[in-house]
Length: 64
Image 1 (cartoon, rainbow, N blue to C red):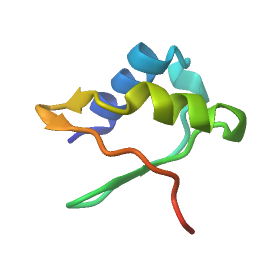
Image 2 (image 1 turned 60 degrees about the horizontal axis):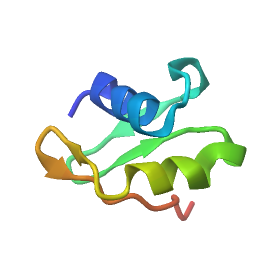
Image 3 (image 1 turned 180 degrees about the horizontal axis):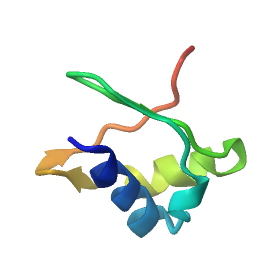
């Protein structure tokens, strides 16, 4: 998974400008993406059920 894959999915599926997407941390089993708080729910809703690089996206808010 590359940051460009995640940015592309958010931009295409949720209609969010890539400039609104902040830091992206990619780990082995998950990624954390910084998005505007006012758009977080609509982004998560748009990404549910989509696939990224052939894998189904599981989307939830970060618990930190």
